[in-house]
Length: 249
Image 1 (cartoon, rainbow, N blue to C red):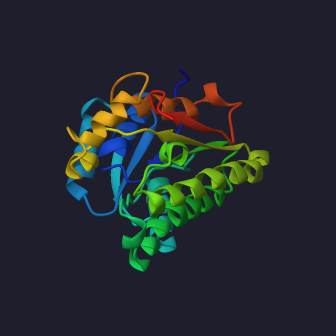
Image 2: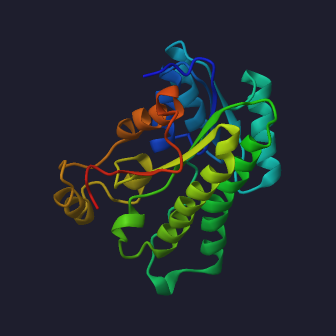
């Protein structure tokens, strides 16, 4: 895999789970990584310590990607530390699982603000830099946009919008050498899903049974894929939405 030695990467929502795995994978390729978090400062600092303890470069920066001023500050801090940002992983997300009858206006606003608006604002911030001649943006969606699980209408709707945004943004930003892709992770074993009671649940058993590779995903499954998409090896890939679910569909 090509080195990301000269790259500066922002990974949003990287204090734990998939985001933390991606941040570590990018650091292993030589990228300087900005570990973004909204509320879990301790988690973000643990990710930074893991990276720097292995000789990598990383800092933690608090910002709520649903706010333009916060996003601007995130990019300013990244630039101050490591220079222009040329890798962006839009991972920060809100997962709301509830019956249709239980969806509230507040849930809608928060889910769409983080999952969709946050992706848009961060993409705008990267594209606003006038001193980059190439970059890679990777948006984190969900395999739920293919499998359409019950009780996930709001979450799946928000990520379906991210998929569409990915394809359109790739067309707009391609002439500037900015590639935009998305990955669709399947059900995964993370701190978040454990908190939700997914590990060992009947639902997890059903998902594993329906997955050709016969297990639940982990953050280690997604980090290398994102690192590849960020690298020069993926220079001819843009506007793609890649299913990464062990074959679950």
